[in-house]
Image 1 (cartoon, rainbow, N blue to C red):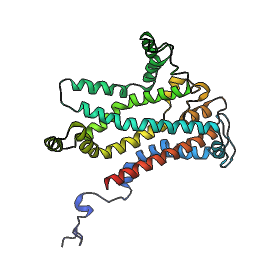
Image 2 (image 1 turned 30 degrees about the vertical axis):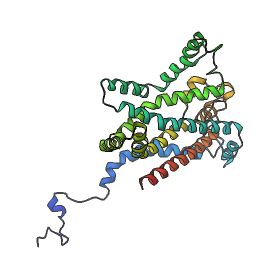
Image 3 (image 1 turned 180 degrees about the vertical axis):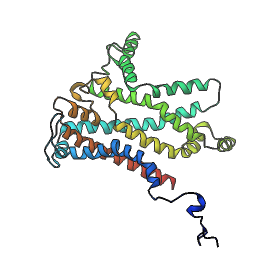
Image 4 (image 1 turned 180 degrees about the horizontal axis):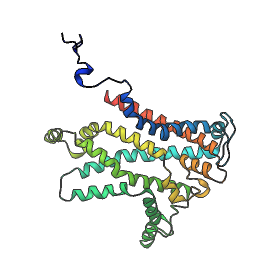
Length: 308
């Protein structure tokens, strides 16, 4: 047996031309990515946890107060009002963003002349800035905006509808903006899923006399169910993080009396407002993180259960 060949049959370092194998070499390649994750993800999270245990403010350090900020949040009516708005936002927006993009994907999947134009048109709001989208809808929904003007001219309305000055209508308006902007984004997800459904299934169902609705319910929905669960999870996380739509439509106060504030809006208002209570804002941020984590785990569990 050659002295350069081990008994296991593996080639030695001398044969491969490598002077010596270093166990830490792979980690050297991972080091830049690990440093970035530590600086921009791990450290901010740890710092937020530590900050939530203090009474720190923007320009001053804080002393350790333990779980007082969490107790304050759980007893704060503003926190519960914002949490209610966030959950309501999720309950309304998520089903719409699961069902409507699927119906839209089924429509634009058809190979007919000019369908590419409609695909691009439906996707345009996705690439537009959230601020630009909010300003457009602000112009559409204000008292002298497009909607009120058109319906008043048609005689449908006797006066302007307070879309942006009523807390409930403001929250509903923000939901409409979120749904409108997310339709094209999740439509692309469904188009990818629909591309994997064998056309033979639809052809066999058509031969059996199944109509379009029957084929949609019996073939399309079961085939894209894993994607529906993924879209539901992603849209739920986005709904719990909504801020820009409410800020642009309702201003810095979050509507009259702050009635349309969500948890991210409350965090910004408490942490960067006049009081600048960063410790309390950090505690509310972690409570929002736990709420988001719960919905993420539920979505993950449903997805795994569906795959089985």
